[in-house]
Image 1 (cartoon, rainbow, N blue to C red):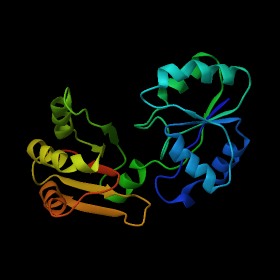
Image 2 (cartoon, one colour):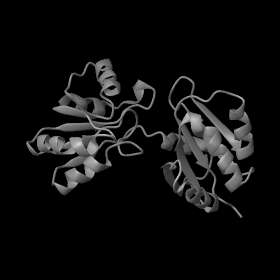
Image 3 (cartoon, rainbow, N blue to C red):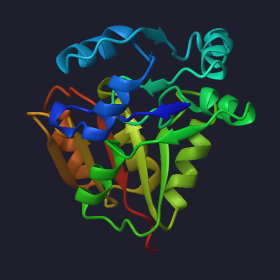
Length: 222
């Protein structure tokens, strides 16, 4: 069996009792970065073999992981933070397990875009999660689609590219489009900056941007 285990995106208290039980009962843990996951397991006094599974090696590592699971071993899939498969490695392994008839379960748990969306104050009855936009090919097309969407859009962005994204949103969506930028969710310096694109751009232009970023964009109203 493969169990997908969400891990804290900041505050370690966000891990669930069920997640800890699954990690303790697993025969091995499949990790995006074994150093990051190793620190998490060490914090909770869990000693398990760690297998590396990330964007650069997932095709190569896939067969050996499948072999272990077919032999009846229990594997727990984790990413560095949040739920594997949501803008993190995991989809390839989950799909392969399903095709091979290996049982897959996914635990509920931390995912950065959900608290950002809910706390944004923007409509969340209908929304689209885009994750990270492509850096080059297809980026302009997606920005145009975002600008014309009538429902809320949720994006991920790295701190060093946030200003560029906000400038692009101002160009395509207009300076007055309501947005919310959520930073360092669940961590000590968590911040929710709400306002128009122009206001949020002006705010972040005056400070160094750090931490994981979620950008929530209101839908077009006219």
